[in-house]
Length: 316
Image (tube, rainbow, N blue to C red; front, side):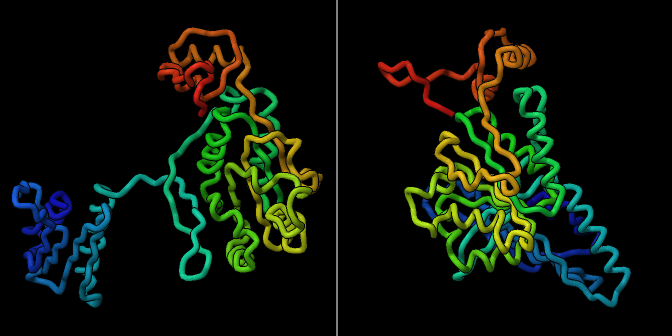
């Protein structure tokens, strides 16, 4: 807050403080040096300019109110905004959407991620390169379909999705949390999808979604996925669904594996011994000459916790 106010340069822009709102601790023995103003109202003495600076929920806002007929003043405001953005603005990062439900309707909330570019050749087994090419090609066209990514924990499924998010950050990725999976059956959800055509739904830990319908009724989430990826709505919505899971592919509803609906199906396995050794040595470790998961490779120096009496590692 102090840095922002200093950047505004009171003398240059002939500003004065009109109002301050302080945040203080109420305890008797509180350290007064920790008190700080979290609202400022500044006023220009030689122009019709007000600047409102506020710090709320760890986010800082600067708002300018000025006489829009004064074009010189407007250019000053624009220059100030650019200065603040260059100095304090966050770095641009990929943004994905998280499905939420509020005010009796579905919506999304933006969440910033990181630019994670994995090296497909070095970080995954050789048979994944062709599958990756198919997946990436599908994300560039308007086509509905299903992508199934499965395998043991720690083999790189989530890292791969982050890679796709970074590479295709202009696409609309919507993460469906587990507690919302059952809501895919809600008619209101179809209304939501109609407003989000060409979106990519990501469902992690999707065991409950894609397992065989023999154990559930026809009004299951799996049935909804079938309709979204190859039903009457599919050609219009162009919704892609990425499901990650740890269960065996044999438990997956066979209808989901049908050609035309399925874009890709891949099982992530531990990295081959040759590639594991190459990656270990690139990270400054000694080779082990054994297949290893990416989690074990990149956390090689972390302590290995074991369940007493079983010698089994607590998983990633």
